[in-house]
Length: 195
Ligand code: GDP
Image 1 (cartoon, rainbow, N blue to C red):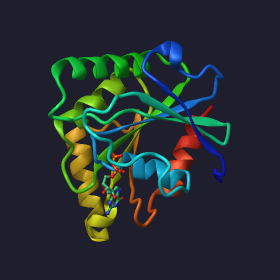
Image 2: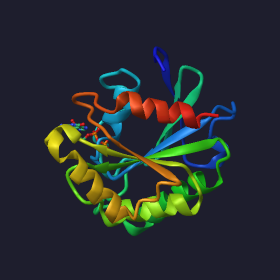
Image 3: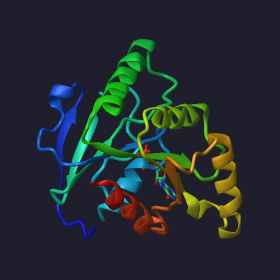
Image 4: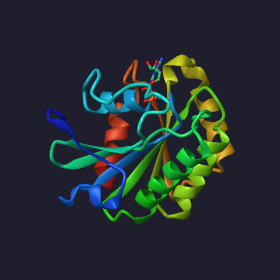
């Protein structure tokens, strides 16, 4: 998709605040700092539309970006802040669980992991949880420019093994917001899941 027009439409916590216009939604999940804002900005050809490196302690909301009046990208706040209180963690969990498990407009989830490392326990839990709810998942391994091309297959194998990757319900893509590697493939996956 050639993107010219994007707006931050809505920040929502509760279902009553989600958009009502019936467009398909693709959510992005991953731990803080994995490269979620950078992926979003790459997909929409912007340098700094989605905020980068969100601060711990900031209000955690679902951010719905309307892209070309055709699809919403839903930025799900990153997991893995050690410092937030248990109450905040519980509120975060409830908001995300409600959205991901009950939203009819949700057509797929892009789950980001760092290409350089084995997935964290949070990454593994999130992936399994999405499969449990039978939500199509694209696992995107970010920061691929930080490892040599010759090692991409090995990195992919490690990630798939640790996730216990299920190819019937999910796809995998190496990605770099520095080189734009994988951008077209991520867009194709999104377009295939928008119906
Ligand atoms: P978020 O917290 O998940 O939204 O992560 P950001 O998009 O803010 O990225 C966190 C840090 O990783 C920033 O310093 C980015 O510049 C860097 N980063 C993100 N994606 C890439 C990538 O593909 N390659 C490299 N080399 N750095 C990246």
